Image (cartoon, rainbow, N blue to C red):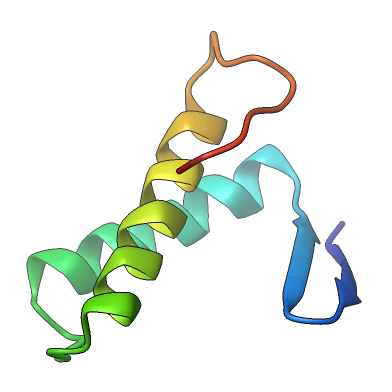
Length: 69
């Protein structure tokens, strides 16, 4: 099951563990292949935070929620 909540400039994704792991795999592949090319520092930082959030969320011992900065 997937769902989302969107408000202003924020989006909250609700994913199953399998969906989150699949998205993490795709993100890792894109990073490894340097598929996303940008020199915009804000975009690079946003990518880093999003990837880190996925990594932490997919860890078996992760908490039920966290802020990623």
